[in-house]
Length: 163
Image (tube, rainbow, N blue to C red; front, side, top):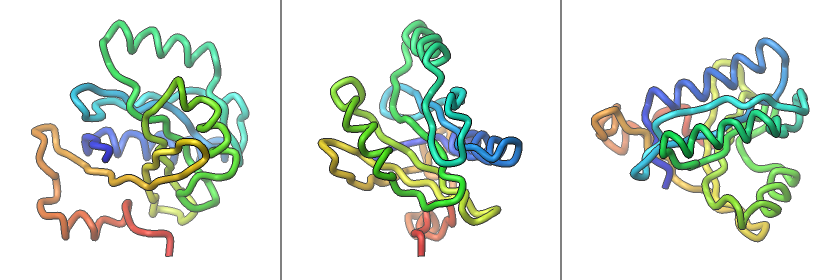
């Protein structure tokens, strides 16, 4: 399960929507935090500048990792957007995750912007080429679910299926 503060979930979605709107490209970055909760989203330049692939700009990635160490924050997830496809890892996403699995064992979060105005966010664990969808639990700053019950969360369109 990936626990993420509501405001940070919104921030990540806004980063992705802005990149699509301004350049038509995939956005990418890190979700970081402590004590098992994502508390911040960082945008990292997509060196591919592409609507169908991403590669985090290496120097920006190294600078961010140094900052995270100084702030004692954990890398909890890598996120990127799919501007025209569903929120499921592509073959390239799976291959890239498998290539770095010994260095990064966090979540992979995908933001689908396929349907304008209705982003879909999903989290995955990818290991040895196997993809396992993981639950996303949105939490308020106080640690409670911001919309109350589990039934209300299931109705939230950001977490709906790709049907």
